[in-house]
Amino acid sequence: MTLTEKIISQKVGREVHADEIVMARVDLVLANDITAPLAIKEFQKMGAKRVFDGQRIVFIPDHYTPCKDVQSAENVRLMREFAKEQDIIFYEIGRGGIEHTLLPDEGLVLPGDLVVGADSHTCTYGAITAFATGVGSTDAAFAMAFGEIWLRVPRTMRFVYKGYLRPWVGGKDLILYTIGKIGVEGARYKAMEFTGEVISRLTMADRFTMTNMAIEAGAKTGLIPFDAVTLKYIQPRAQREYKVFELGKADEIIEIDCSQIEPQVACPYSPANVKSVWELTHISINQVVIGSCTNGRLEDLREAARVLKGKKIHPNVRLIVIPATHKIWEDALRDGLLEIFSSAGAVISPPTCGPCLGGHMGVLGKGERAVATTNRNFPGRMGHRESEVYLASPAVAAASAIMGRIAHPEEVL
Amino acid sequence: MKLRGRALVVGDDIDTDQIIPAVYLTSTDPVELGKHCLEGYAEDFPSRIRQGDILVAGDNFGCGSSREHAPWAIKGAGIQCVIAKSFARIFYRNAINIGLPILECPGGLPAEDGDEIEVDLDSGIIRNLTKNIEKSAEPFPDFLQEIIQAGGLVEYARRRING
Image 1 (cartoon, each protein chain N blue to C red):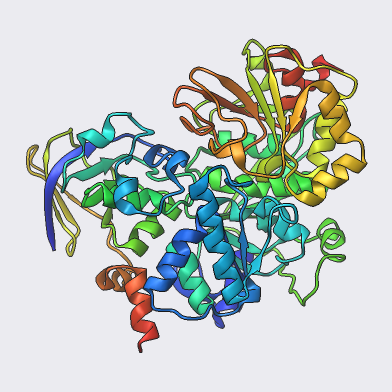
Image 2 (cartoon, rainbow over the protein chains, first blue to last red):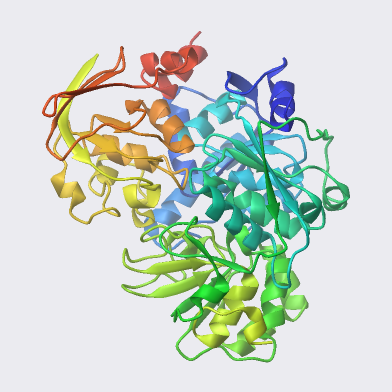
């Protein structure tokens, strides 16, 4: 059996195999300020009265928060009231943050869990060996009512990363390189597994970055096997029992030699349009965004600060730094990172998805170009249809902010 | 059930940001969302849609975010069915869940804007009447048939709640 089959079998109560459609028990359901209002509406249309277990449901306002307009405030008000009525876990701004960084950090998602979230980047939790996948609002409503979800058990596509990483190459570069190799539908309907000696040496932050972007290759989830690094992260956070599932078989195995990989950049308008940073150093930019569920963790901010320390950003560039959660914001303050960013000329935002989806807090105008540590660069993703987003690591983003063009970190250090 | 309508053709990898740009996501009203259907793909697209049109797409239709607002916008705009060479997985399940008929047509359906399309949802036979082409859609697994027959996951859930 594959790792995915083992986890789903446990939730169905019998042995299941790839391609089967099953009804599986869920350990956690989440929704945000875009998807929860629709889920609440569908929940009511179903004629459901009470949720299956409010303490296994999390509502997180993070996309348009702090609320950008009256309609978004009304949506969050609806969420807040429904959460109170149904005893659902709700994170107010100033206590919460971006869902996919917050939930594992708070110990709400644990290894071996089956998690469904009304947000496509729910696949992030595969970094702690949970089976987690993005669904729609009606799915979330169904899961809220019954504690179950219908799933097609996916086949498994295993990636084995070999060799050593060059300086300034990390999780973001590995996942961009991988998506560039297989394309935006290369893993459609499948579970990706990220394994090998390189992965076992990665930090949790780098691992979360990789599993976060599995959806960008069309995958149902991205999984990383449980090891000592996972255990060290989970141990102080877990407040309930969890089960560790070992790696099993795979339907397909792809080996990747990492030794020659340079920092990677995904060019408009596809996360699969990936090039080495050295091919793009002529591209001038207007804005840099460092943050999001992909790269807004403390380790990401440290990486950016290492590049920006004592430097000023280019006069033509606006730099927006967004710590992913309130806790990370506080840690960054205490560690002096926010001062480094501020002195360099950055504006520091409260935790929000904000500009990643062209929501607020740094939307692009016509013809403007950004380097962002976010996850998507489809047409109009960060604003105007004719704006452009280049996806890269925090180090490349920081170096680019200094140079006013796409740059390798070693150009500024 | 047979559906008949005029083809509206789009390409490969049409993501949900193009189907319904994020700026409209504060609404949950299908008709309101429908006014901006595929506006991120082409600004004048909403004005080109006529009630009962059939959207014909390429590979990986609906990739990107999980926003159910995307199939709702398509439904709200009056498009009665989507035919694609392949669908991204979250869009696929969202469409089934909200009762928007979709058909995965291996190899894709050759069509141009305005072609007359006929779809038999029961047999999965798709015809481009203008070009005289016939294709077969991938059949749905039994469980999904059940949801589709119920008219979507909400109705399926209602039946379960009411026994």
